[in-house]
Structure formats: structure tokens, C-alpha cells
Length: 258
Image 1 (cartoon, one colour):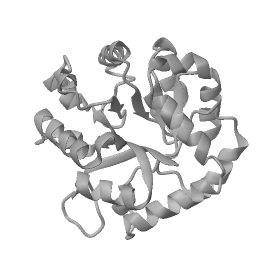
Image 2 (cartoon, rainbow, N blue to C red):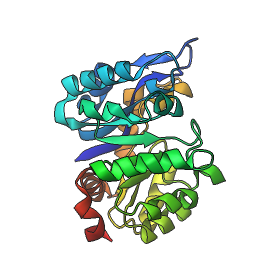
Image 3 (tube, helix red, strand yellow):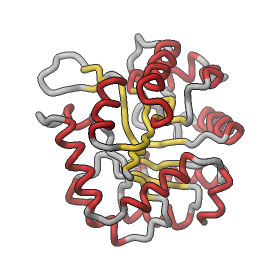
């Protein structure tokens, strides 16, 4: 069973297009369905487009729910702009969103906006919402920096997306029972390294679909199928599906997994 913890709809740069290309809910759901994906986490990159409002993002969420049903677990990509437009996070009342997505590269949540981040995480705790945060090689996005907030909010489930750097991420997973990670946009050659670590059933398969077309002239369904095939070779498919389920499920799973 393949569950993808990191998928996007919305606007992306695409080779050969002067303007960002729109990847619609119907297009993305079609690819996932043809590739046999049973469940996935999806967020909209429209949050990064200044002319697009919260109401439009909610409307798009209704569309993905219409075409995908319960397969789609919709995360609200909360940019600094959208937070400033609605710092009480009234969009949560729409009932469309199952989690929150944050990205330090787009808004400096863990440095200049820590008070806002703590408010967001308090809301997530109150509503039992999981939180995805971009992680990376540089200090600002490092798992160790993010772990400060994961330890402070120990009852919030976090996905430190992208599993990088891998050694550091494995250490954080080991010490923080409320932290998961995913394989989104991981080079295929790295997948075999995943088997060298104990991920405590908190490593999730993820792809970052459809990001490849921003950098490569390739069909996204072809590359997506390659991701699935390469991940299956690791033998981690079943444990990844369990990790996905426990990440999406209520908070009482956290301490059981520690």
C-alpha cells in the first residue's frame, strides 16, 4: 500500500512555461489514482501567490475533496501573508483542512516570527492537527533547529519533510517521539541509505509531486512511477504506510510509538 505524505496542487514553475503552471486537483488526483496511491497529504502552493486569497484556497480544497474524497488529507500551507490576513486562523472553521504546512524559506517562522509560530502550534495542539515543516541542509531549516519547537510542543505531531540531512534526521527521530519525516524530492540514489537507520516507524514515503517539472523536462507520471518503484525496493513500504497512518491519526498514538 502506497501512501504519499507530501503532494501539492497549485502553481509551480515548469520548464518551457513563462508563467507558473497550474497543477489542478483533478490532474494530480488522476496521476495518484493511476499509480495506485491509496492515501496522501496534499497542500496548495497557491498560498505563495500574492493575488490569491484564503477564500480561493478554501474553494480549491473543496475541489480536491470532491475529486479525491477521504483519500486526500488536506494541509493548509500557511504563509506569513495569509497569517497576517487572518491571524485568528478562521479558515480552520471551513472544516476542509486536516493539518498545517509551514516553510521557513518562505516565512522565517523559527527566527523572526517565533511568537506567531508558537500561536500556530498552540492552535494545532488544541485541534489535534499535524504540522508539516520543510527541513533542509542549512542551519535555518535543520532538523535540530526545528526540534526545539517539537520538544516544546511535544503533543503535536510534526513531519520534518525531506529527511535531510539524513544522519541528523535519524537522530532527531530517535529522540523526539512526535517527529516523523518523509522522502519528498529525495534523489533516487539516496533511497537505499534509508535502510541503514531505525526510523521507529516514523519514516513516510513522500514525493513532492509535481516539483520535478520545475527542473527537468520529464513526464511527472513517469517520474512518480520511478519514485514508487525505487522506494518499494527498500522493503519499507509497509512500515511507511503504518507511519503515515499514525501521523494522520489522533495524538494518542505519539507516546505509544516512543
